[in-house]
Image (cartoon, rainbow, N blue to C red):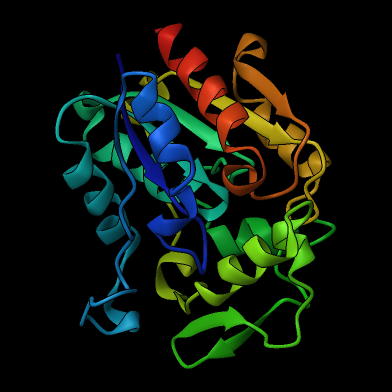
Length: 235
């Protein structure tokens, strides 16, 4: 069985995976879903955090060789983690995520998209950004029942800007790790065209589609766990 490290996206915490974790455990896998730095009880100032802080958090939770799953902005820290220590990474899985380009920052990639993912959703809050109180959360949570959407919205938190402004450095270590991309075909946050473009760096046999919005861990946790398990078993 596989070891999974599930990494959340911007403004989220590890809670977002809470329905997927038991599904993976039931399939016999080891699973952890940490909070990235800058949220919860982390006392560090937002402007002091780096992308490598995010990557080292991922590696600390990987321990042994693991499948790293990054959702949305989580694609950057799992990629950097693989560059820092490829021995602890058996595969990278990008779930409707930013699959980075060497030398680019996440904000640069997002702003270059015809439809920037957080345009009209987020606002600056000091050294972080956060979902605007009046923002349409269906772009994050399309297809979710109202009660679950409200709970997910209540758990959003400010996202440190510094790691997302930092240009990522990738090289042969990251290139050596097998990669898979899961495109969410009803995603209203990162367009399906943008996802398809990023997925081109993966072998065609390692590209998958899910008929969900941007939060498949909430809208179809069983289906997502089954697909993650299938990808891991192909190792």
